[in-house]
Length: 283
Image 1: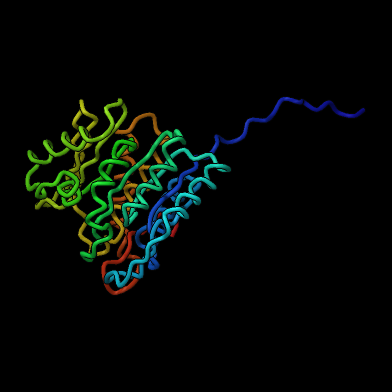
Image 2: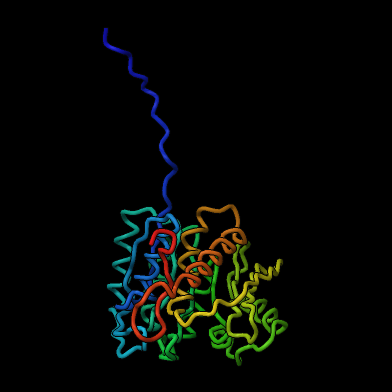
């Protein structure tokens, strides 16, 4: 007798979230799209990448920047979205105002659940990665689209056209101002990173226009911090679809970055500010 076959589909593992980094390329792999893909992959997401700018850089500094044609950036995004479900986007280095416009235009009709904007402006080495005249385009076109923005204190000062803040009290006011620049809809968050403040603790503020959540952790004593901001924002993009709320995803992302920093000295990459250890759990 031929055995009966149950036609009921067997439940498989839950669908893996799909993410994309829209950012520049750092050939040393410590920041930009390459670092974003590492972080997203380490946190269980299927990571895609759209190249928005080219750089010649290593752990010591940036020696050159070459733009990518805005129309080609737009084509990359539209082609990807035409075929692959995307659950979260991380936006990093865009470099120029026309590229910012192309990204905004391509993403506007896509209705992607999570858009994490890391307003990359200056590299760890001090090199400028966003043209000064492009700051207005970033503020006007991408901030209202974002569900979460992750500026550090100098970036927040540039976005608000004010000096960088120097105290936790000032950070609270700046977080409120940044949230006001975003779209008024619910579910929009600011993660203001306070690592530039003096002291042994790194204090970040997570604000949604109502709650002001203080997230504090000891600063990690390592010079290998290249790509810390890129890693945090891409970790958030990977974890937001996997958590029930933004505070939980943010705490998980910060924990991942702290561990990647604590293990960074195990890597020996370059002679400057080396990268985080994105795969510390496996290597």
